[in-house]
Length: 376
Ligand SMILES: [Zn+2]
Ligand SMILES: [Zn+2]
Image (cartoon, rainbow, N blue to C red; front, top):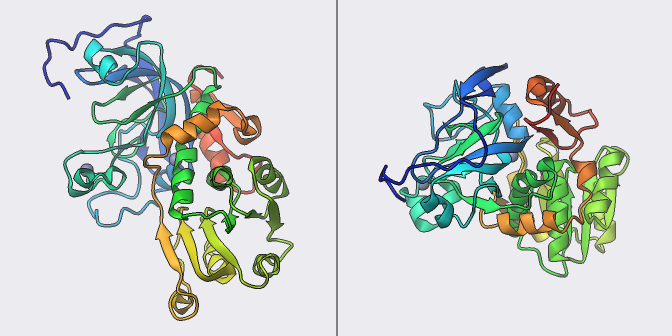
């Protein structure tokens, strides 16, 4: 990456204002819309006009000050103070030097998505290629770099970027983030053609995992949720069978469908504590449990089911390494019912309403996004 300032000259396609509207973190429960200077890209950096930014469960967890960062005691349980949140975004390149544009194989006016993690490229994990587990773990909108709940967002030299078609609505293009994360969860499940795959939760991640599992085409994809409308969506993105667990016993149904054995793979995408024992119980012996969601509280289970009883493979999954191009490709095929998944778009002025809606688990929202070009 270039560190010379000689070729830092930026070329602006459009007139870029000097200030912008941005949501700023002050404390848990205290985010404010403020006027901030528009960042000026230096060498290796790009400036994006934000097309859309999605809000995810992790944003909400930080908003409530309930995030845990294991192994980093110095970090508060929320996004850094003074930080602009927003890690699920796409934007249009409005400034950047020629070297940077060439290196990233883009031109001014192109739309790109950025991976949420900004790897340090120096730690043990980054050097091993496991950049998504970077020890520094800087992430847009949480730590180290400002996110995209603003009219403009700066792409640092260390960021990973991917081109996305400008023909997609912004909120659909920004869905590349949750979709790539769910694709990673699917890959962690090592799905085989003969598998019965159960996916718990039909929110943004669960629906994305169903869409991803469909790409792998196993024998059977079963979706679990308690909201009928979400189960409808689950079928539209590729579930063969849906079970409303408020009405039906998921463990009994799955066993019935698998000659009494149980599922081969279970992907947990609800964040609800009861979904953990549910998965352990409905898996067959030697099955694979993939944990993706974020929990508010600790979850306890009978660990002997993992060892003595079933010899399960229990795997975590974090972020979406190496899955972005495939996720973007799927969005660009326009085969997913994205207008039904991206249920709500708000202007920046209504960020609070948007956050509250994501927090309302009984509500009708699936993916809530902020579109800075919209005005209240
Ligand atoms: Zn997210
Ligand atoms: Zn690193």
